[in-house]
Image 1 (cartoon, rainbow, N blue to C red):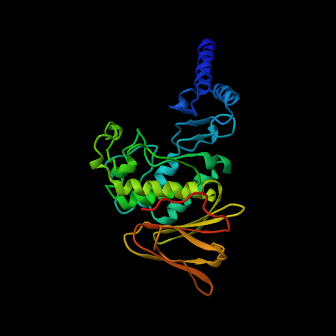
Image 2: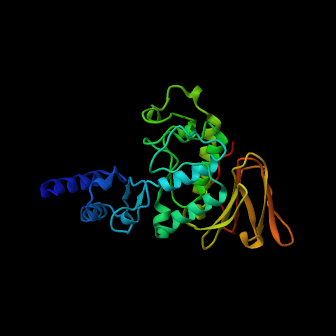
Image 3: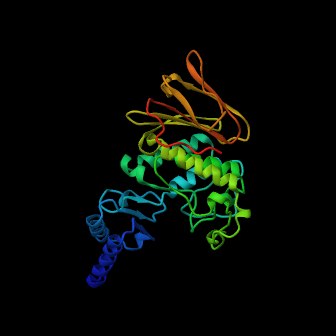
Length: 314
């Protein structure tokens, strides 16, 4: 509220954007409960660099902050809670609770509703910019919350790379760091100890990132839930020239799924995940059929547009 302090903060905001940072992640911005302050902050940042990214640490629904005149996105803990509750439904660690992060075992129908509700809160362009994270310095690591279930973590990463939003990887998750609540979740990265890294997990992260980077539809496509039954979730991402069909099985046993023929255009359907042999999508008279092994996912695309960059092989 002090004009001199306000001016100084705006100078700081401008200085570092001019210096070359890509944007601002704002810690507990709700403690400055002044919409005009944040509107001015945005004008200063965007006038300096229109492409700068402004992300606020807001844990719950954030409609107030995402009207296009304050932040570009928030740390999307609604995404975090929904994804971990679904992929970890069989094996969640219950020794940590947070009033603003709902991580409890849930069936696929509840997961689908949470994702649809989350996406309904904001403009579609904002959903594409949301900072989708699985954990952070303020939470236990995802692997700790999943009770060391690597298969569940992999499913979470696949969802992170295929659902709308901007994936954020907390350093060390990609090599299997599994610290509990603060301060254990903030341990240093073991640069000098590659023998403790989970290299197979690191390879999985790299391939999942390459999948997203190679398919524009996963970054910009519209979202639609196609099925949520048993423990299997199927959804579609659609752009003007490409479709992607994503199917996730969080169960500990093989699951079968039947989808209508309109789930994906079969003119040129390709499996792009997993690489190599994987669950086959077979066309029957009136539907698509697929069987997914336990705790696995599959991605199919249908379009003449090729993948833009080669996916790294194992």
